[in-house]
Amino acid sequence: MGFRLFVPTLAGATLRERLLACIGATIGIALTGVISGLAMGGGPHVALLVAPMGASAVLLFAVPSSPLAQPWSIIGGNSISALVGVTVALVVHDPVIASGLAVALAIAAMSFTRSLHPPGGAAALTAVLGGPAVLSFGFLFPLVPVALNSTILVA
Image (tube, rainbow, N blue to C red; front, side, top):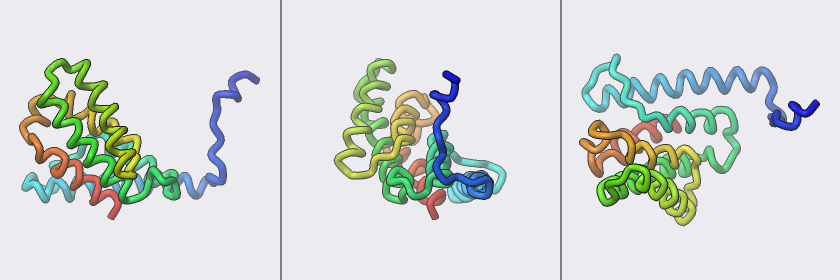
């Protein structure tokens, strides 16, 4: 009986809607990876994806009417947060402090730009903890791959 207290209710989510969400996420993430890889010159078998896109896909396909799953929230929230994360990573060299600061400032930035999107916190964190692979992009990271991935996903 006590276990049921921890089980959330998905109001109105029928089996058909859940299957469509899974199919949409499969196609959306696959196309985002392929198109991003092609756009960066990596070919069709090189997926260029950042991890927060997985969480964005959950919101976009499982709860599409949520304010957190709207195009501006996804594109703006992820990109703005990645910009915040890169900036913090370049200024604050302690990864523990930089991680917390990047997520906190990303929340503030998303709030002020009306683009609140929880995966944006992960985009900021990715920018801080992504190491040389992310830092080599520098201030392009919020545009490519983050904004590119986000735009393709919602298209």
